[in-house]
Image (cartoon, rainbow, N blue to C red; front, side, top):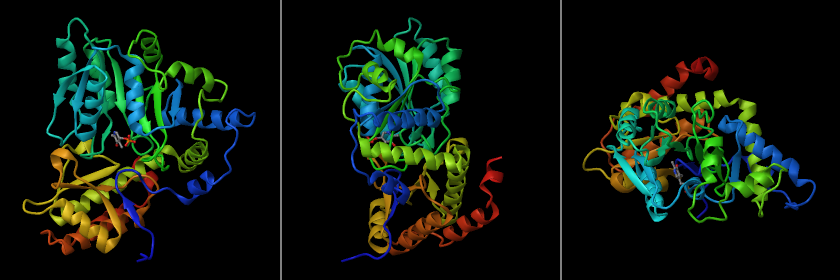
Length: 395
Ligand SMILES: *Cc1c(COP(=O)(O)O)cnc(C)c1O
């Protein structure tokens, strides 16, 4: 049966694709070797450098984010190399599993999945690695399974404090273009991202940003690879082209997304996300529920993971919200399955989208019989009313 109105896709990626981007994608395919293509190529490659806040190369692959994870490792590592990885949640775990499959040796710093990476533990592990076996420190910027962010600038400081030469690799698949990310200023060596989260595009593009030090490491790395090779990409990209067929229509969409982000102003985009996350937490607290992330300065601006009370099932709640309110929320992944649901507040959303989403949650809590105080939406509105000016809020 037809459902009237728009489906609320409030999972933490893919995020809803704005009409402007859908229209930009709805174009005839052009010749990716033709003379007109380079304008588009340069436009998106330069635009992505601005989004990553870097003057170093940005690389665009036709793949999901997982491909760019693999690209980060196969370009820089040799079989048997050691990595230091922090298990902040499910996505950090998946990156580690990928590294194992590639024949690398991850050394793991575990967490309780309720916080970001601890820079002190990273510094300690690097200081203990006196003969510099660890070749890279891998951290997830925004852990999408728990709603915790890691403080990347502090991680860089920890690496420097240990005087360790390891590369700093950061998964900002769900962080980029929603949470501030400063590739150059933070001294990141390889960043990994994807199209379907803060960039508001359909799934299908992934990204690396790469430092000179990472490119230098790539000349010595020996894991066999071909499709992901940075060198061929960088060479073709210099002329505005790609070594193989790019995802032309997603690149039309990407150019539009970059325009939209810059029209709003990147810093305003980040402030909007911080404000919507704070309003969401106000709702969660008023419902009498608990936010998964327990460190205030590490609360994600992208999504909020909410714990359901003992005796309630988060998946039953999500099913009620979907059937009654046509709203999709994120599920709890692996360790927190059934215990957590995730409210995405990323991408192309405004105050009313957020309040609509939180209303769906509040009605769903009722329908699913989850014990709560039905005053969360009001608390979120009260917060939004008192913080109306996004720019003033950012200051
Ligand atoms: C979505 C996501 C991934 C996986 O990206 P795919 O596009 O599904 O391959 C990895 N890491 C994080 C932090 C994510 O949010």
